[in-house]
Amino acid sequence: MNTETAEREIKMSTLMYRVFRRWRGIVVFGLLAALALGGYQGLKLRNGQEGQETSAVSSSSDDLSEPDSSSSGAETYSSLLKKLEKRQKSTREYLDNSILASIDPGHEAQANVSIRVLTEDPDQTAALQKAYEGFLTSGIDWSGLAADMDTKEEYLSELVSFGDEWKESPETPSGLISLTVKHKNTGDAETILKELIRQLENQKTEIAQTAGAHTVSVGTVSTGYFSDPQLEIWLSEQLKGYAEIATDMDRLEAEKDTAKDTFSGETGAAASAAAVVKYALAGFVLGIAAGILLCMIGLVCRRRILSAREWNSTFGLRSLAVIPDKKRRRGPLDRLVEKLDGDKKNQAEEETRYRLAVENISRCSRMLRTEPEGQIRTILLTGDISTEELQETAEKLARAEKQGQKEGRTWLCGQNLASDPDTMAKADRSDAVILVEKTEHSRYSAVQEEVEQLLTWKIPILGTITL
Image 1 (cartoon, helix red, strand yellow):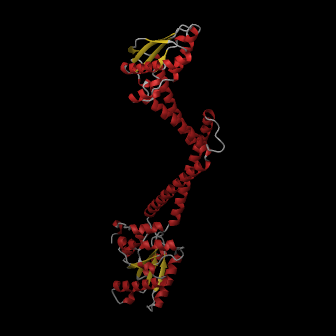
Image 2 (cartoon, one colour; image 1 turned 135 degrees about the vertical axis):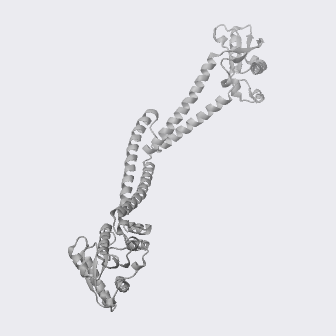
Image 3 (cartoon, helix red, strand yellow; image 1 turned 90 degrees about the horizontal axis):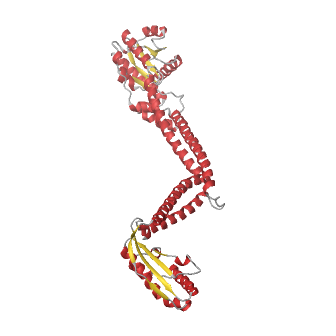
């Protein structure tokens, strides 16, 4: 066997078994990662909330009245938002449906007419003008025309404006009333104006009964398109008001979230706690994964014997017995993890394992003999472990041999051949050698060197016992 070119073969199940045997350290690593990541998130949320509370207090004190003691800041913001939403909805509906708001100020259609109230008594003229003023302001019935034009009454009334010539000289009223109707086209403007004149003439009799007899003279209706700067200013103000409502809503939405953190401490604390727990769980999972990865890298890079299977796959040696360390603490989880090893020899009791080792030694002795079996009487136990462990193994092998009524052999013990001259001398006096190695302790390089020396000296190797 050429050990210099031997490749090491490690089964994944063996590697994972060795990793999971360290489950306590891996869990501690995961808990430390959870504590670190959760603590980091907690500090981050705390600093963020302090900054939000400072800005919320200053903003709320400038723009809002102090919240009612019976409700939270978030509820106050919600009521203000509802009011703004209603205003925004009504303003949007007006701008979409109003005829006046849809008129182009640079191309406004107008229908104009002049009406004169005639009477011989100047005092009576003043009373008549007031009567017609009240009728033009609030007495017109727009319901029929609004239905015909598929619009609302208020959208028609705002299209009408009348001059205030009687206010220019209250002491000597002229009796002249100028009416103007605005619209997108002259046809509709003229229709509205004629309906206004019709109702005005119908109201003449009732006004005469209260203000006295008089004559109403209606001039010729004129139509045309004009530019209206006042309408342009009015439209700009309407759009500006709508935009201000939208801006106020956006500001209140942002401040509402701040108010939740400022005035609803329990809700903010619950959200913060949930975020911290989430990050802590993520840190625990990442810590477990990182711990497993580090253990795998450490086990491979340390180059220690991990399993009895390596004797045959790497060195071509027989495994005589596998005897786990009884001093190692074992709980239910440890026993569950040990099933990953898949070595049925581990399921036997220690005494049975040593008796099995003695039987295997006898078989190997018969296979190696060139003369009668009695030739292999002295066996050297050596390996990369302590002298005490080697002596304990030799004593237990001798006891098992005696219980099995086998012929007594001489068991010699010696540490690693490459480091102990006494062991070399014992090897010369021995008929065969058994390597006793300990998993995760015996160095791969030391075992390889021992095998090479024994092969060089042509000393038979019966096999290995793995602790």
